[in-house]
Image 1 (tube, rainbow, N blue to C red):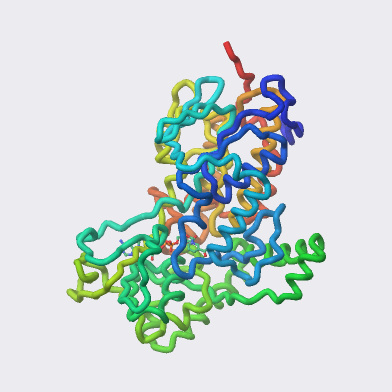
Image 2: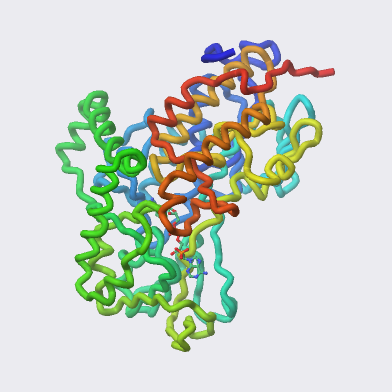
Length: 501
Ligand code: NAP
């Protein structure tokens, strides 16, 4: 079968009651909230969202460091069904983004479905249904499981000798200790990616000294934040349909710049020039040399900042490129023997980008485990489903696009695809899992595309690359993703009736 499955509503199959199939959603971040809203929209009210933390969220709950903001334009970083005419600036701050998602979850009734403090450790399929287990010993039965645990979720701490010996406060950017004031302090900051750049730019003027340990320089694209004038906000409120759509389209286009650079030489050249020209703002040639990458723009995820170019030149900012030898009680000693003293030590060292739904364990049909299916690579079909795991779907799963489109657009597109499979499940009371050979063929296509992308050919190391050195992300733009996920090719799936024998 090829094409859209029937548009089912709750109760179309006699298997399920009027509330629809029982669904467990794992995670209450941007993807989990989306899944909840969409289930309610289709009348599937029998679901629970399991959230391991005590409050709603993912990225925007965990990242509360100074200067945390989203470098995707705010009007794009929203669900398509919930535009926000009230954004006051082009780029939204982390706490405002968290409030937006909380507000959407509340308005759409998703909050009532969330159970907090529920860390999913295992999901097992018994041939008919899933049982989802949490660390506190609870079990949740489900006809369908939606994995939405996020991707840049687990902080990656470096392995530097002496880390435990540091006498002052030390923490990862995604575990910021809000009880610690860094005002007037000497700060050591390890890492120079997006988080490190945002923090340095936000705190340099308030701290006594900030020493950033930069192993690899990053390309920084100068993108100026700007206020959205009151009349524009008013206009957006008064003319919601036309004006919001126009604005969204405009921003979608600018957001796709990164993706266009995959395809168009001119777009790539313009972007590269913008980044290299911006470095000329660094007045000291020695500092500029330290901050100039020797790999292609876009190879690592581009850092976006306007303020960084000035902040990094403050006299109380030092960029240390010497390798770190060890951490000592009073600071960071580099291999040249210098001890860089500080009161607070911050690890802006990124995330484990390749865990996906693990460490949660999955046991699918015939006792086949996720570890078996993913022994070589995280094998999925179109990022949303896994062979041998019937009626288990993922948002922002392995091999989703990365760095080339807004994550919101990506997960909405993936949801629309999953929803067509859910329609089929509800209408016919069936189990759906991708065929292993279809998943393998699809994954090879994605990996081939990724191998030809700047992530692979650009001459850098980054979190895009997996343990084989191949980018684990699909190098496609949002329109390309939308086209490829328009309708499931049902021949690529095994579909069978649920037997209750
Ligand atoms: P990241 O980009 O992975 O950067 C980690 C930094 O830590 C790199 O500079 C890395 O150096 C350094 N590092 C890691 N281990 C080290 C060690 N042992 N010794 C010295 N340096 C070490 O992490 P991130 O800055 O948290 O950003 C991760 C991603 O989150 C971003 O790429 C972006 O997608 C997302 N993010 C987005 C925003 C936003 O505004 N939308 C903001 C923050 C983060 P190497 O480069 O040499 O590995």
